[in-house]
Image (cartoon, one colour):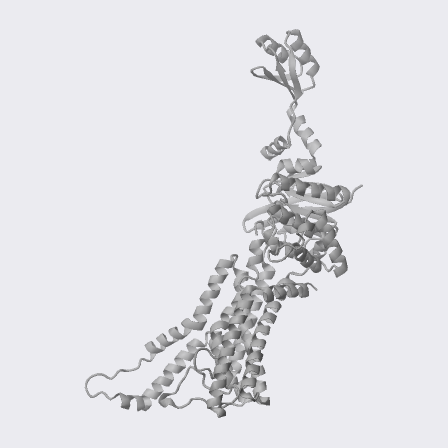
Length: 311
Length: 318
């Protein structure tokens, strides 16, 4: 049974009259790669800032690694790392000096610090640029430096806020690979906040949807997909050599078929129960040939939009 | 723990920054020049005493004028972007995600600035004194040495005030462009504008009557006791207005410590020297209100930035 590492209870934050986070109840378990998904301005960043003790909640409570986010925020910052959105570095300093500063602030003794810096710069592929000033770094390199800085304290949990924003595909892949490796090989709990559906689908198993500061759903991607599909019934897509009105009428008449849509030689058959066998038999009977037959899949985007529409 | 780390990093930043080095070089150059002129002054008037190296410059700036004029810009330059630069660049949220108390950041920054300023002030005064000692062939006596130490301490306090004000500007504003404009405006007001404003006000409140018509006797007017009284009144009005500026307060206090009463802006009528010689305890008693005012200003600026920084809310998007 995995232990919860982040637990929020009715966590709420107002900026003046504006509700940024609204009675958020969320649990993240040790060792998981949790995707925190929501559109811009939905309260993701505010949630992370509250969890790290950088801003104080208006009401509600939360714990990270067992520490209270208001009373013990310094203890949290000892065991949890945050890569904030738009994180910045000291441009006049080299990558090594930047990391050394963060290492010192975490009270890591010098020999250990130097060892970890070397190790981590290698892990994020920056060893060749260790003594280059950060002002010369590309966005992707800075972001990798940011990840290395998060890891220097050997955190139990790492919060990444939009870690791939503004990066080119190569940069995105590098960041994603690093994060996946950390989770799988080092067992690091990762809290991955993003508005990019594809990103989260590629990396995270369990996701939480947040909108207008409210948590709409939390589950594994497969379960969420099933739920959406369950509500919708099953849809089969066919491509045929010939479509006659009689054929369409006969498919519609099959018990369990809700409706049929036709687009030229393509048919979309919506079913309440699985009737794929009966449908294909009917088609063959009408001496038409099936060129393609596939279930319509729900992409994360469909799920995402579906949940948002319902909210 | 956190405060020492921040302090060391910020101090290294200052000492290696072009901004600090340029200001340091400028002050060092101008003050050695003024010390040299002071030496010439002392050679002409041996009774002037060693302290004249700080005020005896005939051409250009004496050390006190240097500090009145450049002091604000040095202090403000080291403080005006201390917080908001890190806010804009995004390094502040990274910094605050580390296991430190928030006040370690502002304390470390302030202490590093004060240290850098002390280094500047003390080394300038030391270099001036050693240069003068070498050229004159005699050094300051025990009492003069004490005066020099007092001036150095007061200079540090004065520069720290401007640093504190700069730090406050950098905490209340989000953009460095705003805080730099605020700094420049304050500098112009306190170093230059204030004396013009004071003169204008004095002229409005106590205008000098211009005798006109035939038979007007200027000489008789200037010698009349009413005229002397009027000039004295104008001077009082002017200095009271200028006391708004910490630069003026600093000047008054330093003049007193150097043993010169009355302030250097006032040249008495009839060409007589208005200066009395003051011993150290008299000088301190006289300049105590000014010193206290600067210290209170410093504490107020730092306390305000400290509170604002601790309450600063890290928001999405900075």
